[in-house]
Image: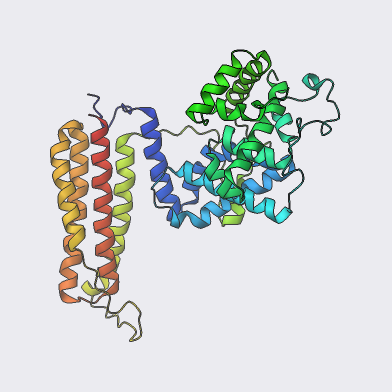
Length: 190
Length: 214
């Protein structure tokens, strides 16, 4: 059995210790402690920014990431601790992104059903291996396929959840995911 | 490549086909090299997606966030290394409690110095009287758990925790005594409830830490 001392280093599992630290910071931030909130920001900003960048255009990512954290600060009092703070924040980020997409009226290519969604978008189909890496190829998917791919394969949401978020049926989510994967096969080595 | 199974390959990769369909597709894969190759590539795409690394933004976005949430001083903490020990976590909880305790002291102090504060007749808090019976029961339960678990913690840690309990219990007793004289005092009622909630939180956290040692 590991024991703890007041002077010695933490002897528990590091993930548990980090989770405890985050719990403390979440409580402090909810009571208005901006320094605690900054620590939460530093912990999660990369994941939030990457999610936003993958689901929207890169030039939107900075502003939307800031929006996510401002919304999180405003809504921290509603966080009940039923899930980890990171899980709660991530779902909030998805909601902010989807709301932004509605505002922008992003609809182009949403129901693309062709064999190669990337064809014609890059203009370099003959030599994709030297023109795009996997992330760039992802960014060039039609919006519907891109959203579903990011939410399902990158972020781990299930089709039923994605369907609810996007207002489509699960079959559409599955179809979009398959088209995205088929298109991305050529960029595996990048 | 386009046969009857082409559009079902991702569902197969994700294990979402019904048993009958899966068996039929596997029979097809045994004879179709194109579909077999596609399945292998789809699996690689899935693995690649899971392995994508999260990248930081090119610029530090915190100053913009700090400005929008009204944080006073923007401190660059990126170079600092944060680590928390269990005593530090407990200390943070105790600090919160003591801060609250100082609030109670400030509330009680005017009574001791004969400064009379007359509440406004229309105060919306004037008749608040918070029941603490459920919290008493919860604290008693958690206290029992703590008594059983404390052997899993270092004796020095247990000593600090028990000192914190003594401080909290004193604050609770003071608040209750003050409420005897002024049962409808809104601040005292809320302070009592808040102090008991903090004791609950400390008990929960310490018990969780002790349990993690098992």
